[in-house]
Length: 213
Image 1 (cartoon, rainbow, N blue to C red):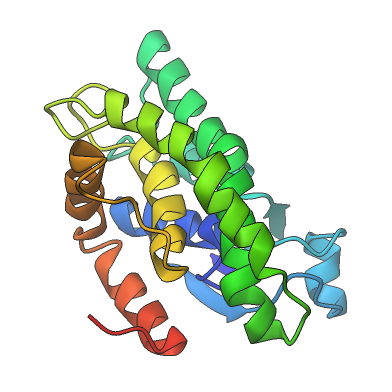
Image 2 (image 1 turned 180 degrees about the vertical axis):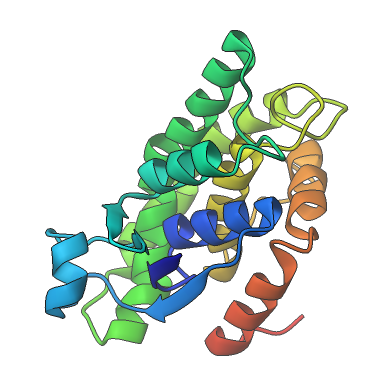
């Protein structure tokens, strides 16, 4: 299996962590959004990352990819079978990919991605997103962290991967949740991203970005 993209993308990181938790080996093909390589565009016609191949079978979109991996490698289960747990897991993935992405994407692009790609940025957009859009989302997440430190039931799942991969990007962009305001969320995030599936990726990314501490 090959994933095309860069782990600084929260969607690419989602796939990498998901596969690592499954014990499924992935080959990484470094690719940036909008890449014009014909083989990449055959898999991802709109230039989005991640793209994915398993032999001759190809996909693009992180949600589709993790569903494929789950179906092909069902153990350990990261998407519950029980109806209510499955529904809640998919909700949290969708929440992360759409609602949390809105401020996180603005912050990360304008503070990190634009510089890496040599594109224009607007730091006022990032500041506005951090000050006005992000707090109510983090406040809601603070209410969702149970004592189990797993968003769905008492078992680590795709829900935790999807939410925490977005929180990683906030940290990279200097917008990590304040532990005094969101103590449960920060403790939960720290526990999840310390897992062996997350920690080495984050460390490598921080080195690339010149982040310390």
